[in-house]
Image 1 (cartoon, rainbow, N blue to C red):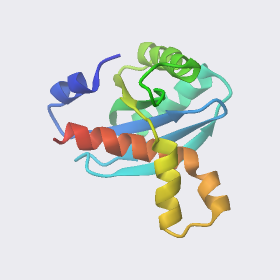
Image 2: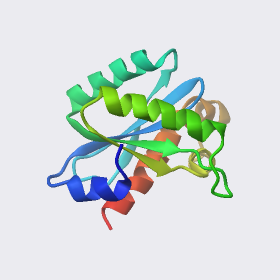
Image 3: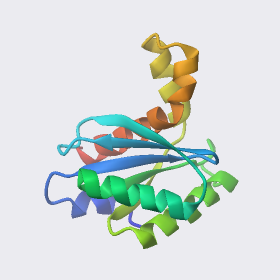
Image 4: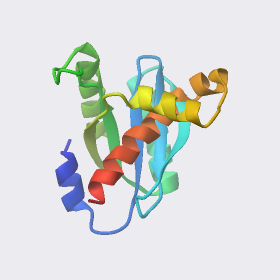
Length: 151
């Protein structure tokens, strides 16, 4: 895995990235345009096992010419790493070893809350908000990362 700073240095041409919000039951996936200006919710994957996740990610990477993966890192509000951060780190390492694109972690503190709040401001009903919360959180994560990459 590389840092977000290294990802910024390695990008020599416009390329699409995907963002992941790794949950215990569902994985939110987002995708950005080649200019890396807008992150869009893409899909939610029901988590069964890491190998199936990797297979689905390989399909997305191939189909959409993805050059990097940004994974939300659930750091505690005080900056410490809890059990969920360790779990994300383990899955991220497996993804990094199995897929031949750059993988980096991005601080995702408040991403789910942010995604939920944005969707509430858009007057989306609660049932639809909860259904799409994982992919919206992934878009929130990826948008933060691409904003950093563009500055």
